[in-house]
Image (cartoon, rainbow, N blue to C red; front, side, top):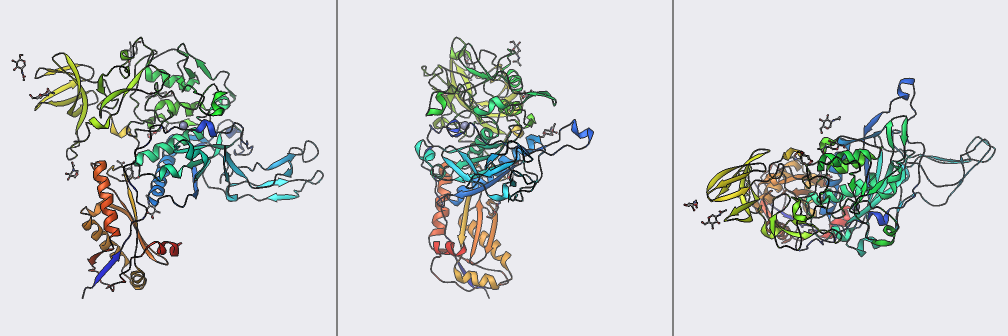
Length: 636
Ligand SMILES: *[C@@H]1O[C@H](CO)[C@@H](O)[C@H](O)[C@H]1NC(C)=O
Ligand SMILES: *[C@@H]1O[C@H](CO)[C@@H](O)[C@H](O)[C@H]1NC(C)=O
Ligand SMILES: *[C@@H]1O[C@H](CO)[C@@H](O)[C@H](O)[C@H]1NC(C)=O
Ligand SMILES: *[C@@H]1O[C@H](CO)[C@@H](O)[C@H](O)[C@H]1NC(C)=O
Ligand SMILES: *[C@@H]1O[C@H](CO)[C@@H](O)[C@H](O)[C@H]1NC(C)=O
Ligand SMILES: *[C@@H]1O[C@H](CO)[C@@H](O)[C@H](O)[C@H]1NC(C)=O
Ligand SMILES: *[C@@H]1O[C@H](CO)[C@@H](O)[C@H](O)[C@H]1NC(C)=O
Ligand SMILES: *[C@@H]1O[C@H](CO)[C@@H](O)[C@H](O)[C@H]1NC(C)=O
Ligand SMILES: [Zn+2]
C-alpha cells in the first residue's frame, strides 16, 4: 500500500536579478599591495648528484586555496559558484604554468623572527621572536595564517647549538607550491568603491616568486545578485594573476635568464613611447605583442594603464598593474571586469607571467584575442580613430558591430585619456536573442550591410564553413562570405569581416561554465525535510530511492527535465537535507531565468509539495509545519 509523503522544502538564500552591475567596478590591487613582504629562504629542494645540479626540475603550478572567514550572510549560491570558479582557475594554472619544484609537502616560512645573531656559532639564526601570530597581510586586511601551513622556526641562545625554543612545522600540503587564503570580509575597501574583490601576495621565496597570497571577495558585492559562472571565474582569475606576478612592486624583481646560470634583475622595465604610453618591455612580452599586433618595433611592449592618481599609492608610481584599458580592450588584465562574454585570457597576459622568470608557460591555452590583431605598431594612434578597424570616434554617432559581433555596438569612450573609443556591446540591440539552439551551427551575428551606398550594421543568420568562410542569410537568400572580401546579393553588399571575427575555434575557449551543456548560471538549492521524515529515513534502507523520486517530483513541478538537476546530495545527519543544483537550459534569457528562480523559490516556499512514494519503503505523512531556519542551526 502506498502512502503519501509530504516533503516540506524551503529554498534558502536565493537572490536574483534587477541589480545592474555598476560600470565603475575597478580593481584596487595597486592600492592594497604592500611593497615589501617577507622573503623566505628555504623553499627549494637541494639538488643532489652532479647531473641534477645543472638542471632544474619543474612541476605544475599548484595553487592550494583555503576558503576561510566567510561572512555568514553570504548566500550559499555564491559560495557554490565561488568554489566552482576556484577549482577551474586552479586547474587552468595546473594545465598551463610550471614552477621550480619546491619542498614537498609545501610550507611557508615564518617571518616572526625579530632578531638574528650576527656572529657566534648561531650566526644568522633567530635569537628573538616577535609576539603574536603569523599574518598574511595586505593593506588594512590581515589574515592569521593557520599553523598547518607554516614551517618550523627555531630560536637559539648565543652559546648553545641546541635551540632554546621551537615553533613546530605544520604538515603542509602535498604537491602544492602556492597558498592562497580566501576570505569574504566586509572591509572599508569593499564599501568604499563598489569593489568586487581584491588581493595581493604576502610572501616571496628566495627567487622572489610569490608563494602565498590573500584574496578578499567582498560580500557586499557578491551578495547582490547571482552572476554568470564566467564572472566569478574572471574576477578570481584577474586577482590571482596580480598575486602571481602582474604587480607593480614585482616588476623590478622579475628574473631575466639567458640560461640557468645567467639570471639578473631587469635593467629596464618600461619605456614611454611617443604617445606617452608606458610599455613594459620584458623580452617575452614584447615578442607576444609583436606577434599579436604585427609590429616589429623593438620596444613594442605591453601598454599599461595610465596612472590617474587614484589613491595615494599610485601617485608616486610610474606604472600600474593593469593593461591600458583601450589598447588591450577585452583582456582579462584591464582594470575593469565587465562584459564577461567578451573577456579573454590572452596570450599577452600569459607572456607577462612568462616574463617573470618564475614560470614556464604553455601558451596553447590562451584564448583567442581578437582586439587589435594585426593592426600594426600605430594601433590606437593613427591620425583618425576610424583608421583602426576596432576603434571609433566617440563624437560620431556611427553604429557598428561590437568586437565579437554579438550586438550592434555604440561607440563609447573607454578612458578619458584616450581620444578613441570602441563599439561597446549594446544589449538592447543584441543579435543573440533569437539564436536557434536546435541547430547550433547557425548563429545570428552582426555584419555590416551596404544598401544604396549606406552601410548599416545588421543581425544576420550565419553559418561557419571554415575559419575564413561563412554563409549568411539576407531576405531568404543564402550568400557566401570570404574573410575581408565583399559579397553581393539581392542588391545589398556585405562587408565580410576579417579573420577570426565570426568563425573561430570554440575549442580554444576556456570552459568557465558549471553545467555540462554550457549554461552559465547554476542555482544551488538546499531543502530541509521535516523531522518526521528524517526519523523515517534513519530507519529506512531505501534512501537512494527516496532521493531519486524526490528529484523526479521536483523536476515535474518545475516542468523541467530531471537531467537539469545535477550534483544532488542527500545528507542525513542530525536532520535531513537535500542539496542539488539546477542547471537551466543554456538558451534561457535572463528574464526567463529570473522567472525560473522565482518559480523554484515559490514552489519550495509555499509550504509543501506532495508526491506519492512508490518505493519499497513506506514513509508516514510527516508533520505539517514547515521546517525553517531552526533546522539549519541544529545541523551545524
Ligand atoms: C604567444 O606568446 C608567445 C611568447 O611570446 C609567442 O611565442 C607566441 O607566438 C604567441 N602566440 C600567439 C598566438 O600570439
Ligand atoms: C601544452 O598544452 C597542450 C594542451 O593544452 C598539450 O597538448 C601540450 O603538450 C603542452 N605543451 C607542453 C610543452 O607541455
Ligand atoms: C604585417 O604587416 C606587414 C607590413 O607592415 C604586412 O605586409 C603583412 O601582411 C602583415 N601581416 C599580417 C599577418 O597581417
Ligand atoms: C529585406 O527585405 C525587406 C523588405 O523588402 C527590407 O525592408 C529589408 O531592408 C531587407 N533586408 C536586407 C538586409 O536587405
Ligand atoms: C536589384 O536591382 C535591380 C536594378 O535596380 C532590380 O531590377 C532588381 O529587381 C533588384 N533585385 C532585388 C532582389 O531587389
Ligand atoms: C565544462 O565544465 C563542466 C564542469 O566542470 C563539465 O561538466 C562540462 O563537461 C564542461 N563542458 C565542456 C563543453 O567541456
Ligand atoms: C556537489 O555537492 C556537494 C555537496 O553539496 C559539494 O560538496 C560538491 O562540491 C559539489 N560538487 C561540485 C562539482 O560542485
Ligand atoms: C531552448 O532549447 C530547447 C531544447 O534544446 C528547446 O526545446 C526550446 O524551444 C529552446 N527555447 C528557445 C526559446 O529557443
Ligand atoms: Zn586588477
